[in-house]
Length: 216
Image 1 (cartoon, rainbow, N blue to C red):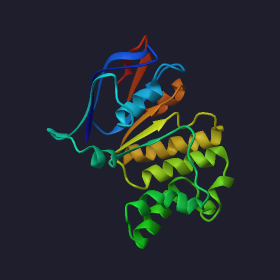
Image 2: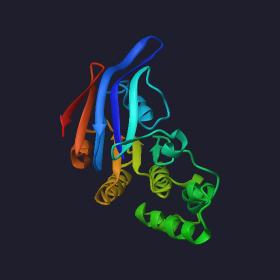
Image 3: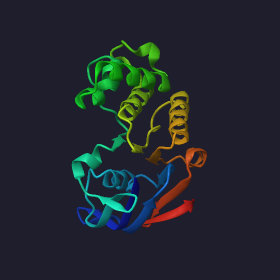
Image 4: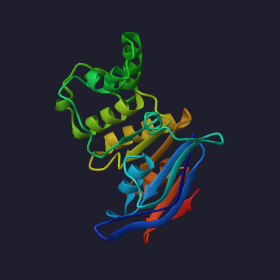
């Protein structure tokens, strides 16, 4: 699935966040968007994930040469993890399994896929613990596992290691690299230049309201 954004612009209350930006994500790998606070990183990710519309320009997804136009089914093929993960008052297992349950997955599929994600996120020992009792870093890992369990074709991560300790940040980077090896497209924002260099196949910078490639 290929993502193409063409000459998009966005403004809030008359203040232009970015303008006339174009970008193509046409292969597997990790794509990192950088920029200072308020530069529009999160807004760009929400627009790419079809959760927000640009003021002008176009966001399009393609499979081969065919443009994908069914909005609901298209949105089910991607997911975005926010910096503050919403946690349900339920076990860690049930939080991760939620997306599978609402999609009507069978009991065995839920068990197998959720257990695999618990392992990937290093949360197996927390399986039956109330998710609300987790640390902030553990909650962030849970949120990423919950996004991955539904096997999205594109994973969006908005500042996935912001405000968490170094150990949890390292574990999240390991998850990202693991999914990169499996062929997933991952589009993430970060303010950490060193992290971007460690993870990214391509790095883009939002600067002076423009999208500028600095590695790729």
